[in-house]
Image (cartoon, rainbow, N blue to C red; front, side):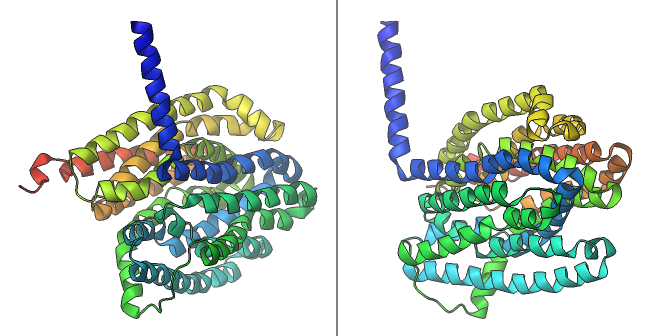
Length: 438
């Protein structure tokens, strides 16, 4: 009897899994896994080659330029990756409203592009350390162009991520081939910077073609009030993203200013490995976001159960990834960077906690707080965490260099989820008392 019961349970579980994978949500999770695999695993395949060919200092200068361009990427995104995704999800069955969301978001992004250009160009001209490497900075600016034009938020809101996944396959494979073909020594720095910065631009072009062919949206001439509405709906999300810069890009950027490009290379290699492990689970939360927008439209016991199931599925895996990184750090660094990057081992061990704490933070922030109307509280959490990071970062870099920047990052990322839990409980988001009487 127990054997039959176990067999029946396993068969039922397998049937449920097959049904889930055949659903639209299942298709989008698998598609997002394809995107994330190409975004993070393929660069890790290329990374050992680049580190050995370019060397720490040359690679570090590219990472330094990319960290600076990260500020412009966050500015031009302005939180639209969440707010526009949610708006598209809610308007998917209303063509006129969908068109308004689409074109208003693009118009807002173009205005932010002009603002970014007005900031980046004078900075490169006036700051000596930027001016010395202006060619690298100019090439890495392609990251900003790609971030503006890439409409993943549109396909994600429609839960049609298979199209994006297919486009990513082509662009990432092209960049992989280009890297091994064109980058042969440290003198190919600009070519390497271009290859690292252009995949999103190519993906954006492919997505625009896909929109015209597979997911057309009618033209809508956005009015000033529409663009203002797009900014208003994303304002608190942008503040959250901008605050995150106080402990993401700023750590590598300030590390470069204080300790040089070699320290940036050590920090960047360790960070890429830790973030790649975290993004192993990212597709589930990205795919679940549009569904969460609907389930959590009104906080209830159903929403609470939805979040609990998601946490029970994701957090044990994230914890296992963190433990694996800590235990196998020497072998991972040896494989990825070789002997020249042996000093990155302690940096990676400091960052080993990131897959777990980032999974907690993403679940609480993007899946829960954004969808239950706590975006303002979320921006305050990130702002406070960013300020704490800035307060401790210079001293930690001064004493520990790359490991110090990593420690500041981990402290900030650990503080974030704790404050998010407090904010959710303080708002009594899932309390029965908040539900309307019937």
